[in-house]
Image 1 (cartoon, each protein chain N blue to C red):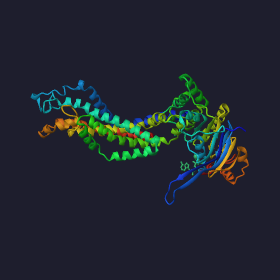
Image 2 (cartoon, each protein chain N blue to C red):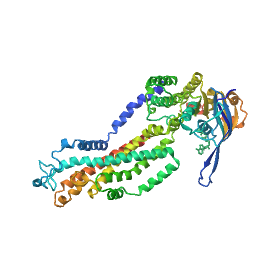
Image 3 (cartoon, helix red, strand yellow):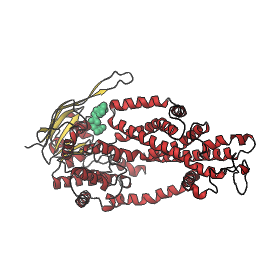
Image 4 (cartoon, chains in turn blue, green):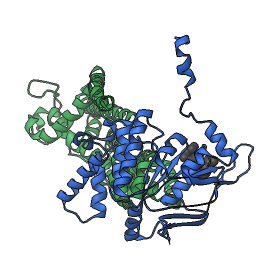
Length: 276
Length: 288
Ligand SMILES: Nc1ncnc2c1ncn2[C@@H]1O[C@H](COP(=O)(O)OP(=O)(O)OP(=O)(O)O)[C@@H](O)[C@H]1O
Ligand SMILES: [Mg+2]
């Protein structure tokens, strides 16, 4: 199987400042994590809060430097973060990221169109007409209309902002899109829309997803493969359906038992007739 | 989907309503007064009934009359005309101070936040030290070195005000620096200068504006004080701080118009700038 992204024995140790009663020390956020992701694939990293998912995502994006281990793209090691203008732009076209909070991941002073156009201008030698066309195309792809494209983030709902963030991330046609809890801040109905959108976009563009989530229901819908993390380590990995339907590791089982499944009735709604 | 798209539509009228309900007389008066003084400074030749430097020994030290609304000074110049013309130098000084200090302070602050590390630590230290020098003391020293006039106090105050602006802007820029939208710009391959100028700067600009307006008020007061003690603008120029000083003899002789009129202009203008700056700061906070 060909490989787009490869992680080999990735490790991240944060120095911890001395707190009240506790000496300064080290925190191993990510410990010996390895996995691969094929081109156009979709891999989910799941685990409870603090298990190191975001740290993995940030290292892959290049926002954090691994303490040790290797990250490869197409078999080539990722170049160092500060390596001149050409390298910086080349890196940008490889990997893009959509953040959890759509309220802080877009510049409040910039319209959606301007934000996308800025990236196109920085990366491609296109004339204004061509850029405008591409902006319109991207907005249409994520389901935003002309008025929403001309609006600032403040005038948009959370779901619309996340659509805008996705359009912006896809503007550079990256090989890999990292989504760190990208739907966690949204209402369930909006969440479903964005997940469908992501599935469509992957089919259309062939972009690969590294999908970070603690929501196993969402993971099941979006990912082919899945990696379960616990305290910085991978405890289980494989096809998503296999891992979620037949978990081998006790931690994965515990994680699964905490998630509502089909047929599960929220307790509050079940008793609402009596209490109302 | 309908519920989602209708959100901004329903939000617009309610926020407009809220703004209407919050009509703020202090703010309106401040804006009007600031606009008025600027207008007076620009249009002084059209508005002033007399040449501000035209002396008339025969009409010296007169009280208010139909010809001279505020009376005349010790050498017979029309005080009203001098107050109007005085707006020019009295506002020019603070404007220069604020333009220099705001540009320098904002640039330093954003650069410090962007580069971080030792650059930020050194700058923060230097600013802490600069805070220890009172602006007026710095101005006096500068005048000793460069001689009286407009330049020396303006340069000194610009230097003294830079740390104030830099400190406020730095903390705001630091907040922005670690928001995901800046990281997403980095990931998109945008250059550091571009991110600073096109993204961080616009987002801290409301605060910069508030800080600049407040500084206009305080530097007007500081420059007025420097002129009053004779180290700033020199006679026979018309400037409010200088006029307060010029009118002292008349004041002791029972005709306080010159000192009063000029002093009144200083105080009201300073208060107006302060009020306006405060309101702008509140708005910048609300937005952040
Ligand atoms: N910059 C940092 N400095 C110090 N410790 C950090 C830093 N970033 C993360 N950590 C620590 O590393 C551990 C893993 O954090 P991480 O954010 O990767 O978890 P996560 O799985 O994404 O959790 P969540 O689901 O809550 O987002 C946590 O204990 C966290 O406190
Ligand atoms: Mg996280």
